[in-house]
Image 1 (cartoon, rainbow over the protein chains, first blue to last red):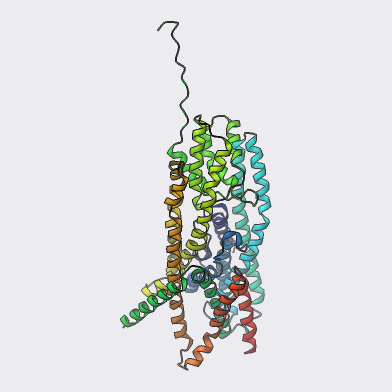
Image 2: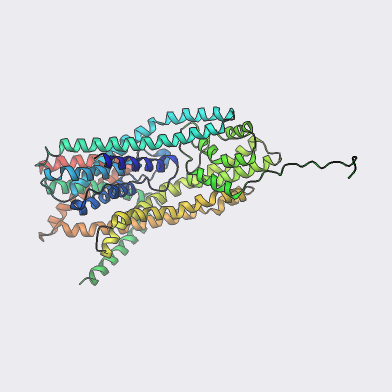
Amino acid sequence: MLTELLRVALLGGLLTIDRSAGWNLMLGQPLVGACLAGALLNPGPEWEPLALRIPLGVGVLLQMLLTDPSLPAAQKPRDTATAGVVGASVGILCLERLHPYLTVTGGIVWVLVGTLAGLLAAMAGGWLEVGMRSGSQDAARRGEALALEGKVAAFEALYWRGVGRLFLRGASWSVAATVAGVAGASLLLPNAAHFLTGPRSGLLFAAVLGVALGAGYHAHVRTPRNGFRWAFLGALVAAVVLLRSKGGAP
Amino acid sequence: MTDLEPVPIETPPAPRLRTIDFWRMTYCSFYLQALFAPERQQGPGFALALLPAIKRLHAGAAERGRALARHMGFFGTHPVLSGYVLGLVARLEERRAQGAPIDDAQIETAKRSLASPLAALGDPLFWVTLRPLAGLAGILGLGLVSLAGVAGPDQRVLVCPLLALLTYNAVALHYRVRGVPRGYAMADEPGKLLHSLRLGPLKAVFERVSAFLFGFLIVLTLVPMTASADPAGQGAMHTASVLAPFALAWIGTILALRRWPGRSVELALAAALVALVVSTRV
């Protein structure tokens, strides 16, 4: 577990730098974070098909749910960078440890567990991020004082320490949220094994997927002008592609 | 040469920025928001990114410090487009170091006059349109690889994030890499520079592509879902009852987000809870 948590910490730290320090290379998006976590936390060949599908499922759901079409100033504080990492890590680590306790086979339960963990991590991480801004404010004031004293090298060191602090915040939050998620699932799921039937998991998954697509509609179709017309065209093209691919199948 | 002839005094050459300084500024601009706070926003990051130019143009520590402190006040623009402002300010600082009569207020005015429109155009383009579009492209990779029927291990775990990263960075990195040199070259024509970026038309194109791809995704999701809802062939009523939770959550979210925008996380948690409660009753 320790090596896995180290990987989670490294990934969470890097993705936080991408999102908060200004790289903005899209690494901090939930889909990318979840898939990277999935690639790093491979639990072994016996879990092979599920271990790759769980981060994908978690990443896709979180990507749609955490896409906010508002301008940044109007957005709710959400830590999207670590949400994907935490969600996928919780899903995979729970799969490895708790799968034998459940009667439901297949990865849908773990996708659900990972997605819910990711959503909670995004909310709590957002509050944590807002709370850390006062530290940046103090550092900026110290930086100005150093510059006025002509201590340019000290200002640079102060700034890079700020980048390091972001990395540490992302790393520690990712590990803490992952441990909390796995611990919570370890307490709840074995006791609720009889309750988590296949149809019930399917119902929960359908509800979350419905909300995700509703959020996607809001982001991609409702906000742009003439969005519905273009979405209809896309649906038409997809229908034609599907019909042709079915027609060509033996 | 006689003793009476004046001895030419060697004056130091006027300081000029070099290409390596532009690259260093571009690199530092990738850390623009590390000390982001409401009071100054990206001000400290802007000062750090301008530091390679300041070091080239000013010799003494005190002079460098003063130049640095001048740029540590409030600054806010779109991070991807910050290079254009950095280039413009570096050009003005260079002229000032060469002796041109440019004061602090002129530099500050020029900086803000470019930073504000870049923020106003960049935020809707990159945050509201391109980033969701790139995420959608990544999600679509899930369906497209399945359609292609690629054998072997599940490669979608690599294909999906790669598609998202390529879609976003093909546009964003172009602006980031060109920002500083272009801002420097067009420092005298900020209006022309702004117009040449074509941010508005690009946003309109991405919006349409985004809506088109979402329509595509809906069909790719609904068709297999409908097909798998009734494996025993029990009829349309059975299919409708299986798909009802999904449809209700979808329509409910569309309606709820009109009233409470940005609350999709809370809605997802609430939907999961309602589904759990309903499943115990039915």
